[in-house]
Amino acid sequence: MNLAGWVPAQIEWTASGPVISWCWLGETPLTDPFYDNTIDRVIGTPFNRLFTHRTGIDALGRWHAESPGLEPSGLIFHMSRCGSTLVSRMLAALPDHLVVSEAGPLDGIAKAGRMDWLRWMVSALGHRRTGRESRYFIKFDSSTTLHLPLVRQAYPDVPWIFVYRDPVEVLASHMNDPSAAMMRGVIGRGGLDLPAGEVLAMTDAEYRARVLARLCETAVHELRQSGLPLNYVQLPDGVWGEVAAHFGIRLAEAEIGAMKTVAQFHAKHPKSRFQPDEECKRSGIAPEARKAAERLVRPLYNDLETLRLRRSAGVP
Amino acid sequence: MIYWFGTPMDSKADFERFRAMVVSEPVLRERLLECRSDAELFSLVIALARDRGLIFDETDLSRIANQNRRRWLERWTLA
Image (cartoon, rainbow over all chains, first blue to last red; front, side):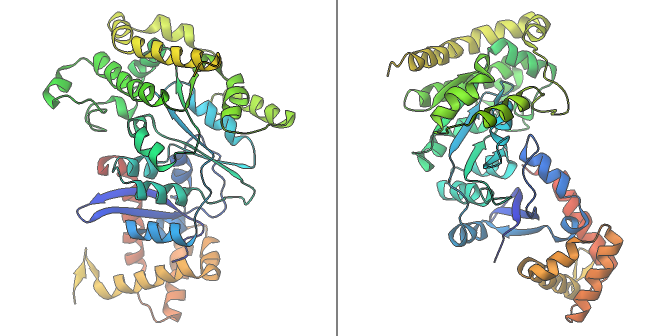
């Protein structure tokens, strides 16, 4: 089956395995902050309403064998609400970059723990959209950080980064507007190896701080072996600096200019200008949430900072 | 007659055959992609399918379109 122009839109889990829904994207570039935004925009067209079709996971494997997509050039993991979307938007500013940001089908398949399925999905999403793309970057959902070992195993030679931010600022954002991963039961237990009763008995602040801690803990463990830690405070310059170097990209002045232009706008709402919000987040957080961030996440943030500073000082 | 969610099995099978053609035939697909409304698309699909000996009607197509849309909207509950 020739699936050129069709992309995985979603995964459903059935008793006989995952089922992939394919929708028509044609040559539409992935210009939205998130992959699912693009799918949401195209899946409502008359054509897709009728011809979105479903296949088993084997069709994904056959498509990979027949027509593999680009090999990834760089992978982006993060703790959420930390500037990772700005990183992906800045990379996407260059026309020879294909950037897939938090694609639901990819993050979904990663949770299955099957390396072959993961590779097939990465391949299906890695087809050139405009024909000009020569590099392919993937930003995963924050929860996929828990599956970093599997992704590293699947792509041992692909450079990756972990983006993080001061835990008080991150938790403040989730207390104000929690992501799905921060709501108990929406996406499992956030990777917490705790009984359901214990998870349900926690305050929101403690639960969300523990999920953030779990993500950072996984990242710290993996960063001791490879990868680049990137702190929010390094943005945006760090993208054309450390990140570009780590991903092996040599940028022309005009390309850095294109990235700088993107960085002037809010990464998730690109029609609005970016406004710094550190002070607002720090002053707006409730004392209980601040304490949870300091107690549960701060020690791991400090570990990430140690790793980053050692790396920038050239200490192995 | 066997029914599938209220749709005669024959029309479902016919639509699946037509859908496979849409996936594999770029010229057919390009023609359908030009349609800007469900009404325009449905009438063209029914006519082109009939030319190929495949029979289904607007009710079948509405049901399929709604099912696809619902599946996308309910993706969080399916996770």
